[in-house]
Image (cartoon, rainbow, N blue to C red; front, side, top):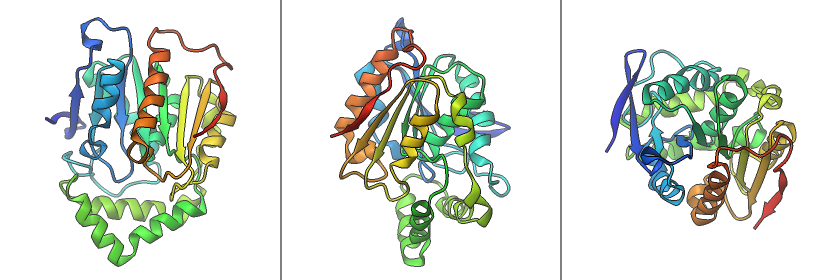
Length: 275
């Protein structure tokens, strides 16, 4: 059942999964960050399964304008991912008393995790980064344009009603931001060398919103240990399309960090997995 916390007097929907961390476990708290059109409920039972596999407590929340959270106020700026990472996410962690997070981000949520890791100045055990965006690619814009076509958009908005209180403004904000001419130059690669925490980078080979270069670019430029998992016959949502495989990889990554010792800086990078 969802509950609410607040950010600047606006309600943010969230769901808490206890795990065993509240009863003396030494592992981190998992914090799930959804995709651009996602919400608490759009994760389905993946957070529950990952929590159960690791014993870690977990927080799943819907950003403003998503799910059952309050609407966004005003137009979405081109810096919206930075604001989510450096203003909203720290406030959420503080309200929930989470001091040892491990971020699990998908798409926009993966980018938020990277920005937080690079620029928040806060402790971070590690991050599972699934289908991230670190720069804008033609395939990304083409995928958004196709989704914005009138017939497809109407169908997508109808399907989004299962997960969002008011999907129309959310969909418009998503398409308008990504298709803005100014957004074509958006890029966070300059932040990546500041990331020192362990990362698990996951992407589908057939991702309709990004090429494998998205995770390769991150792995090359961060200064901490980075493991890549590139999945054939998989699109933009590996935790749904290859759920058991992604669950196993994520649980193994989390268990490797649960003793409180991160791999030494510069070690832990493994060859790309092609399964």
